[in-house]
Image (cartoon, rainbow, N blue to C red; front, side, top):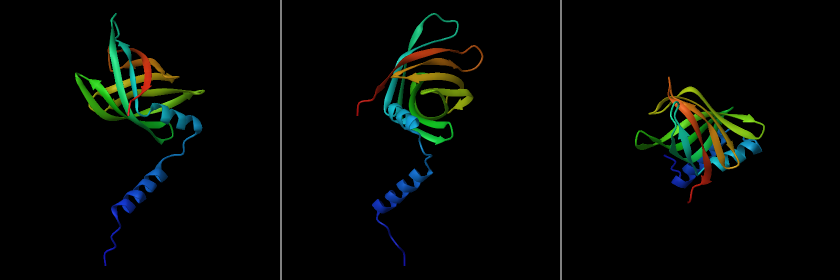
Length: 148
């Protein structure tokens, strides 16, 4: 005899199991996760050796803590004239109550290796980026909730 569970029951069980695998969040981490999910980062960036600023825009659908200081950003990132929807794993370090996004020579899917230090605070971001020899610069802007 085959036991058949309704689809809703299976989805409920899968959801509970997925939540059990999620690491516990501190109040600060929970506030960070909530403040960085369904947001748009819009600002400007510079390139090393250049004098002009270029527009910068990233859409972050969801932020999830994976383990320890490792988080996943489900983001839409502009790259070479395209908008790439990719998961990006980053390290979050805390300077008191301020999250700092860190990547050090880490592979970003479809984009290459990047190094980033980005401070997030009160609806703003600022930091630096590099992508190999002579490619890099600064970035800054505002963080706003994406309209539903």
